[in-house]
Amino acid sequence: MPRTTSDVTTPTLTLTPPPRGAAVALDAVGKTFGLARGRSVTALQGVDLQVADGEFVAIVGPSGCGKSTVLRMVAGLEAPTEGTVAVEGRAPGDLARSHRLGVAFQEHALLPWSNVWDNVALPYRLAGRPVDRARVDALVELVGLQGFEKARPRQLSGGMRQRAAIARALVLHPDVLLLDEPFGALDAVTRRRMNRELARIWAEERITTVLVTHDVEEALFLADRVVVMTGRPGTVRHVHEVAFARPRGAELTRSPEFHEAVDLLTGLLDAESTPA
Amino acid sequence: MTSPTRARRTVLAVLGVVLLLAAAQVVGRTGVAGPSWPPMTDVVAYLLDETRRATVLRAAGATVASAAWGLLAGVLAACATAGVGLLLPPLRPGLDRLAALLHAVPVIALAPLLITTVGRESTPAVVAGLGAGFVVFVAVSSGLGLGGGTSTHDDVFTTFGASRVRRLVRLQLPRAVPTLLDGLTLAAPAAVLGATIGEWFGAPRGLGVLVVSAMQNFQVDLLWAAAACATVLSLLAYGVTTVAQRAAVRRVS
Image (tube, helix red, strand yellow):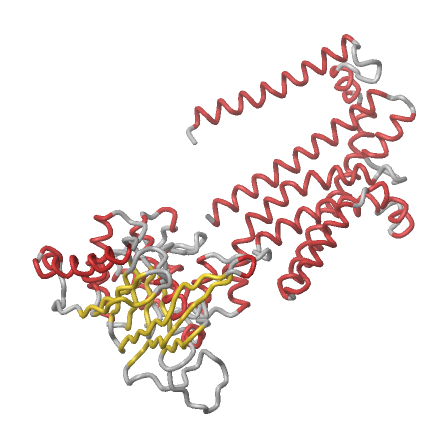
């Protein structure tokens, strides 16, 4: 990669400006984790990925392919050992520090001592801003939790907890939304319903979104582009443009085009996981 | 939990205590354990006498006061020490070792030092505080997550750009409350027993003083009455703090 020799301050800053409109840019990113006794494991190698402003990108791959590591690097929770990660042209942590990032994890991670309303309002309090009560009310309604504002997380079902976590991620109008298998722990029926609701919510907010999942159907249903990753070390195997028109409904998942795309991507994943 | 099983557990617990007391009564009555094991009824009869009861209760009041001051001082010192560890991470391993070392020194070895520094009157409270403080320090440190390791909650706070103060107030402190109270349920009885032992080293009043004096004068009934009183106080301290701990767990989980 050609590098300009201008003022280098920290290795996470991009040296070349990202392409216009790229909200998230990973450039030749590698990640090596140190293990005991001087050994190490390479989780990611040479990952290039660009997410345009307002685009929904899904990353699919088998367990251990490093897809969650990609997301954690974009969130600023991990630093790459090679290459650069830039969010809006700056270090990923900057976006979090300026309270313009929304993240929902596989574990809902709601505060157990707070009720739904206060959990959704939490980002305002962490940003030191006055709570916009109307916005919190609107998001609670958007994710279908009206009437449960005073309920504590342990009184809710798994699906309701995840919806509250997604409302919390959206409440500050983030520039970038990161979803790390948010429905991974749910049963198949609840999961499909949550996907339809997420598609509806996303259609209203249109935020630059990166979704990590191992579910090909979920990725194709929600995303504009699906990135197929394969493992050890994790690399981008294929990028699939999803042409289905929005809004997408349940009938899309029954169409032959959808099944064809599912078969194609599943085939790519299966081919890689067969031992050579 | 359904009420029949709770009632059953209560009955079993009461039955256990009754059986234990009955066995102690039989041992005392038959005299198989020698003259220093009286029948339980003799101990109760001893306490039924008004002046003797007043003596034991006065001593218990002194012990409770020492234990309470010790517990308070121990909790404050433990929280302050854990707070230093929170603010200055490089000091954490050193503070852990210092607390473990203080806890490892036998009270009997500290006694001469305490008598010359804080005096005979305050030694019971200090001994109570040392025992209680160590338990609370361990509980608070682990509750605040000073041992390292992060949860998804920590990741959530990082990605929302929470400052250290807001993370402390909105995540670390509420998360530490059940563990702190867990520590208190162990620290409160430890403070009562610590105060009683601390009173052996020449304190003017207290259950420990009664125990020493009863031993030296072979007042077996008084000895047992004082010991029973210390045990009941210890159990009460445990019971009260357990109720608080359960309430806190219900609140934060």
